[in-house]
Amino acid sequence: MKTYTTIKTLVFSAIVATTFTSCVKDDDWNAPEILCNNRFDAPTTEMAAFAALAPTTGTYKVPADGAPVIFDAYVVSSDESGNFYKTISFQDKPENPTVGLQMEVDKASNYADFPVGAHIRIKANGLVLGLDRGTVKIGSIDPTYPIGRIPSILLTRYLAGVCNGENRMDIATLVPTKIATLNLAKQSKYINTLVQVSDVQFKLDDPTKPYTYISYTAGVGQNTDRDIEGKNGNTTVIRNSGFSTFGSTLVPTKSGDLTFVVSRYDSNWQMLIRGTSDVNFNNDRFPSGDPNTPDDPSSTAVNLFAGSDFENWATFIGSVNSFGIKQPLAQGVGLGLNGSNSAQIKGTAAGNDYLFTAIAPAGLPASPKRITFYIKGTSTGKSLSLNVYRTSGSPAYYTYNLLNFTKSSIIDVSDANDYRGAIDTKGEWMLVEINLAGAPLINLTAGKDIFAIKTGSAGVYDINIDNIKIE
Image: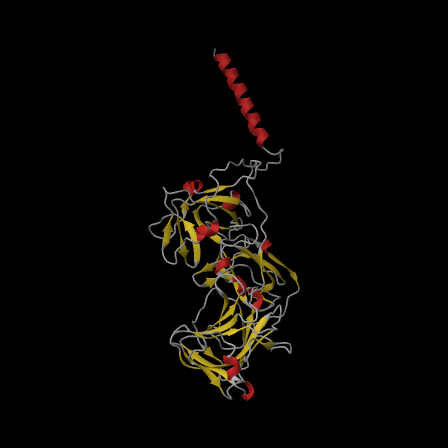
């Protein structure tokens, strides 16, 4: 009996050994592919709808015992190179995403389970959602932090891969959203999504002496911001972790395409690369300087609306919508460019008011690139905000903000009206260029609203504006 039992044991062991050996792909010692089983039921909501539940202050707790709240997403981050730490960033679609989120997890090496492009499914019941330091996050309830890290032993309760029909995890090929300028990437709608900006380079005082991705103190790597500049203006920083495996690598001295996950810490934008493969700089370096200085209006530029040179005040008044004009706006006779007339803003604003909203005339350029105008004077307490109206969508306009304005500048589209800052042109005429690259749906239909100037409540203004043109 003892001999028979021993034989059975040996046979069983051989079968088990053969079974496990057959799971290994050939004999190259690669890890076997992990079989995939959809742990959660089908999605019950869209990721965008879920993200919209985030309150402006505080957090929203998804009821643990309520109806299942399940949505799909695609991973855009990777901690393989150490530049992401205990977070997973994901967006709602592999291409042209509409929203991104960040999950806080008390676990490292997440790339091994959820690589870039992994199609994931999240069951949010029992988690909290909210805005934390400028970023919408999802995580666990925590007595210390608004949004805590999900314990590693509980992660599978909330996060799983989605199968591709062949019992393997579905891995999508992500297509970064192409953004025209670095400043345009600084919008809330892009946070935790993958984007790409072309014609950029590291800002180097001496290109023959490039620095490393991170700085070191006594041999210890430090979290480091490195400045990026664009050929067509604007700058940003990429934030590199002191633990990144590429930290000691010299940054490239050439220019090219930069792919990154958009991130923000409070009001500071800091872009994150997954590794050096996101830095595709193979083109010659372009001259540094201040490319944010706009060119003068060209000979083909036309008035944005009737009377936008403010020479004939009655013509201007006839081009605004039914709300008319509001104090402290008046004609500045002889106060315009080269002694012409201007639109003068002089006094204290009673509120966040529309000074005027102008109507589009016939004959505007079909595909305009920019709006320009000249400005001279000062404001204290508040700056100016500008609306360029759109054909569809919400809100009804694109927003541009002057903020702290002290020199001729190109301004890009913003998330919302922002009246903070002050204006001081030091007694000189300066040029403002409104970059329309971020405004593809600008309304050019005659008779429809096209442009507005707004003041900030209690701001004190002594400003002249002249020659508002489009080209």
